[in-house]
Image (cartoon, rainbow, N blue to C red):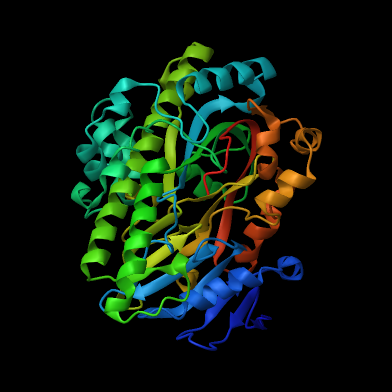
Length: 478
């Protein structure tokens, strides 16, 4: 079907209601991204989301939008907390896949290629990558799952696996409320042995450099300056969250008819928020989200340990302080325009503006950092939301977004082309062929994607980071 996207402002396009749509959809694209855009299936998925009960206008498509399962990746859907539904597929398989940014006191020019190679090796020795990999450490494989899923990152921080101040620089303090392990299946619990691992897909640990600062005063609050070494950690709840999404998508699909819900697709299986299925999913989702916060916390601890070992410096000298940790596959109750809504963000990141009461104290005057990773070999960005960010339910894109399917990338690219496209970035991987679907050419231009919301007046760039060395998860986690 041909969808008619009507221009409705700077870098904004409206998909007017048709068929069963109750509300409109709004897609953010620059002229260049619009000219490249051929994602009719992603638009259909936005239209499907706009047909669910209690959905609030508009359903949002971010500049990195591409086809997903149910809601497109780069999709935002808000539903009324009293009359709306919750959809496991609109959150995604990798619940609380997210990004954590660490800053250091190190200058990038001090890290030779040899040191970078040693750092990658030391990190990889501690943090397994790849689909299905379990933690190397028994204490993490056999951690108190109820405590981890209820307390999140704080569980490990308070046991010495982090700095006390880390907790204040994580979205929701590193623990979503309402978690209840009783809502999680035994099969999901059996997949909870993957703490301190990054998995596969587009997950990574990246050593980078602050290439450019756009807002010096804001960057100073974040502890960022040009030439400085940074670390990005991108991973989520692993097999634990994947199983929870699988379980509840099936339960919601089975239960929909008894609530009179006509599902537009299997991927948007949904249940009323206040139904048993809805309440139990939110409790299980919070468990997975908190598991993911804990996962990134443990990886942070191990990265700090690796830097100490290789550089023979103390953490006080190295820095490795947490700038922020933000989720991009999650559903949260939030206040928007005087209403309590359940905001589903799938491949989208929250960006609270300056003055918003839910900002951490250190970022109250600036708005917290929204971290937007590029593909391996391309830049990443730190941005803040402006006073107009409410137009997207305080949401920004979560990355560059795919422009080439995984299947097409694997069939059309060679390991040599991948290596060349990395432009000197060190890549730690056992098999380059297994990473062809993550080649930079398979993704949209990160500068163009970030610039779309900047030019629309919704965000401001704070800093641009460039990669120096990357550990990449091998295998597709869906």
